[in-house]
Structure formats: C-alpha cells, structure tokens
Image (tube, rainbow, N blue to C red):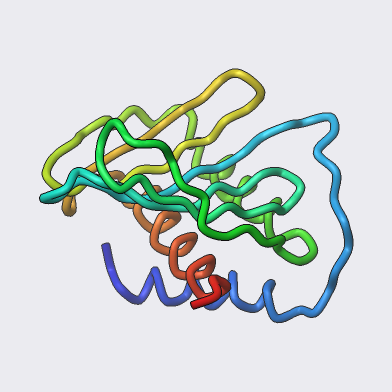
Length: 148
C-alpha cells in the first residue's frame, strides 16, 4: 500500500470531521455496522472500533483470547461521516472480497447488515489494497477523535 493513498484518504475523512455539522441520523431502513481493528502478538489481544449506522462509535479492546470485550470509550461522529465509511465499502464491493488470512498480527474489517456479517482479514502486506486503505483511513480518523 502506498502511504500517499492513505494520506489522501485520511485528509478526505478529516475534512468531513471538520465540517462542524451536527445533524442526527437514524438507521432505518438499512441497519449496518462496521468493525475494524487488529490483534495478535504475544498476548493474543485485540483492539478496534465499532461504528453503527447512527454514527455511534465504541472503542474496544480484548486483553487476551477468552476474555470479555471491554468498551473503553463511546462517542458520536458528526453529519454523514458514518455513511461515508459505508459508502466506501459499498463502492469497493467489500462484500464480494474474500480474503481471510490470520497470523501473528492480524488486521480486519467487518461489515454487518442486520444478522449478516462479512469479514476480511490479513497480515502484513498480503491484504486487498482497497480494504487496507479503508482500514488505515478508518483507524487514523477515529483514533484522532479518541480522548487520551
């Protein structure tokens, strides 16, 4: 993946965040959510973000396999930021991408529509470029909003 692509995508997302709009969205009729994160390594733990169609974000972590998911923060995105992320996944035909690699350190993106879920996972540089760009853009832009 080229760093320039990630930077351009992140700048686009940040411009949405900085727009200052604060409209409230509802999910009907298309209920969906996006989860993205990474995990593995020595402890096998993972962390990431959940984004629901109404703009609510949950920051979560799992310290080690077999332990409960701990939500450490929750907040809402402005305007149509949530819709932007779903539209990106729709435009790259995310649900038609089949890639499920795991390893010592695994990255993932999951799109859930109702009870249906589609997940793409990869290690290192072996993932689909469009999904890796989305993951990096999503993680950078949401991380910028997380309270330290």
